[in-house]
Image (cartoon, rainbow, N blue to C red; front, side, top):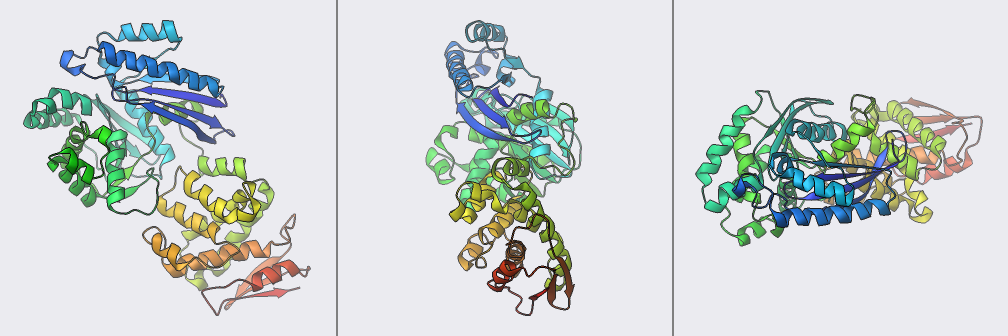
Length: 490
């Protein structure tokens, strides 16, 4: 597959472009993103779906600039898809031909089911795996649904429900009862499946989640994989629909560019959640664009990453960890220490993975600046460990690397991220174990040149070498469990 790929997604409300760069077989990262709120469907639904001249020209101009951006990144492949507004427009060929002739760009209009599938495979691959989940992608002209069970996608569905469509047909005429009846009629086509989780895709859902995040004073500035409970979601939707003015919407932290379409989107969500029983809500920062990219990247593996493969981890390893051999030593040794001491230290086995990954990625920050390595590793993990992890996973792994080889996590840090981190004693113990792992390899052996055993409250380090640097480094560490000790036997 091409090293750099541009994806353009022409929606009813916005046209967006992303540029992805592949760093190894299945590892990639976002290189650039741009969007323009062209609203190509403006006034179309009042004219039997006919695209109007001014919105089409806005879209044409945006596409022209997007192509220039794509050329600047020397992309070797460009994929452009269009969804509901063009799909439904009787005069779509006029626009398609103009773009093809003047911009040399081929636009592929995808079906509603394909649109639902693209959004769903992005979620299935790039969010923490979920069982019995329903993805919902509310656009300007249509809303897509898909059933997701771990990495499997099925029962894709596209309905003629969209924020711009409802605004022009019902909200502009203040016919809310008509909008409710129309939505409910469309929702009769929803599949009858047992749903535990609602995964929200698209601008409307992201706007709602971002607002809830601000109201909750959420400590992590990351929308992808942001999770909250059904009660919070239901309450906020109700408040949105009760908002009487722009001032009310501003109080709810809604951006002004969404004032005219947020309530139609909220009404769709309110009617959807009346039909299904939910426990939690997950926000997706990925959607159709990522699905288009993944369908190309993973075309020979049934649109799934290999088992136990994580693209974000691989990207960080490829791009920032120079000595992968030593990183593997840290990974292996951290697991050994955990396996020997976790029961005594009363640490849940689920944290073995977090400790090992923190060890593996610890030196990533040194590729940015050696003397501020911990700070840069912390930032890289917090921001770039993007796909396949919960926010709790990300913050624990990042926290461990921030304080590695140093003092234990500060009270200020633990308090700030309290809702995302384990209990204080657990976090501090894991932090110590990572520091211990790094300390024991202070002499950077080509292969681990000692064996570990554990008895009573002591970790025994058995080696034919003196391990002077390791002994010195370990002596500086502080452990929450004062009775826990490390003994070197040479």
